[in-house]
Amino acid sequence: MIEIIGAKGKINNVDDFLEKINIFAKENNVIIQTFDADLVFGKNHILSAVEHAVRAIERKTNTTNSLEKEILLYASGERQIKLAISKVGVKLKNEKIVFVFINNVKKNASKYIIKNFLDMLSLVRDDNVIKGDEETLIRFGIKENEIKTVMKDKYADLILEKVAMVDIIK
View 1 (cartoon, rainbow, N blue to C red):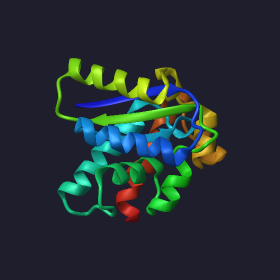
View 2: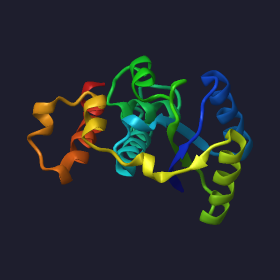
View 3: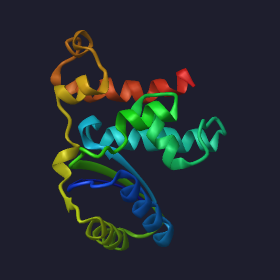
View 4: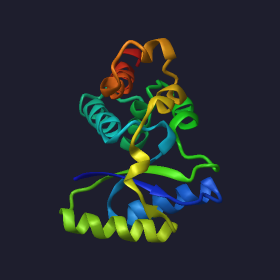
């Protein structure tokens, strides 16, 4: 099961925050990746990154040594993990965060895992933080002249194109 959620809260220490996530993921046998919500343009953005990352690992064309990192690469539209982390990874200033959970449990169990996860991090679920807008595109690095070439209802396609381009630039 793949579950993409948004949350609000405060990150006081990025290293501690990520360590808690890693421990929780191992204890619950779930893969978790986290993103700066200001750089995410809808659930399809992250879902596409997951699908590309899984396919890269299956074909042995992955760049990184883990599904989590490979997802981050694709979500960022970058080829290097360092650039991906600085672009879409969580930062100290983040109060809006997006998570993707990947596991083999049923939906009801998944809801329980997510609730416990958010409680552990003192976060409140808010899927509205996943919605992107023109500012999201600009923060992502898409130029205004590119944005003007598509109708508003096609903005997400600009991000999905960047996700797909990672396969080409690898």
